[in-house]
Image 1 (cartoon, rainbow, N blue to C red):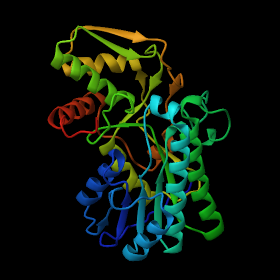
Image 2: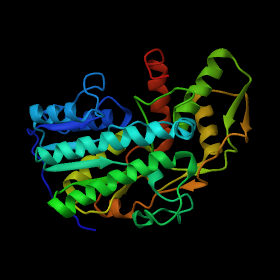
Image 3: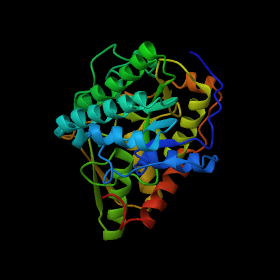
Image 4: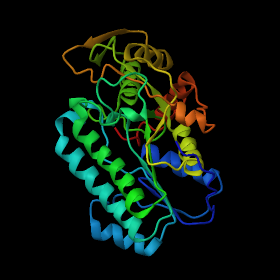
Length: 320
């Protein structure tokens, strides 16, 4: 691992791709709070990153010096397993267009946000970055994973061929303000918040969750992700991706119990084992990130409480 002390110019144009999404929105807020005064973003309604000519025209106009690539088509296990073509095609096009344009317009530092799903389904736990490409992927999200792996390889190729100081980071499961709470396309923690909140408000006596509840997962609040993103941009310069997580996990059943407590739900909880569980366990080895001096600051229960309060306050406008 190569560490580096790279002081980013707080006045330079800094493009956050996907700045209205869960991860990108948190990165934008953190950079703003850290004193960056020239943040650049475009909603997908104004700039479709799948359209190559439009992406190049945007880079020609804005000339960003730094880029955080947080734009992607994302979704939960149902969306990934039923729409693999969109998750592969859209994400590959988005990444290729942005990275090629960033090279053409001489972007100094770029960080590609990937996903922990790039690692093999049965990778040794906790998962080291060296596990990449050592085994078969989880089939319910293999198309999305392949797209993200392509992004990692693209960054590495840019470093090798053009000496670009670009990096990639693999966050664990994210949650927090701005999440997607749709019943069909959300990730597990947001889905649980929506499900238990609906049950409390409607007086339902039973909540049914997907799967068996046995898989173990790690969760990272997006405010911690954003803090880690800036930290690695200024302290890491290596071809290998770097994991971003907490180093702690719990079962989905335990997570369900936690969300139910936060929501004030006291009814029964059932599990639909006909629905897929996905990977049995997914815990990241974060020793390389910790060696750079970064630690998470949001404990899980406090983070879930904050996420639930945000959803309750934005129920009508949240993505659902």
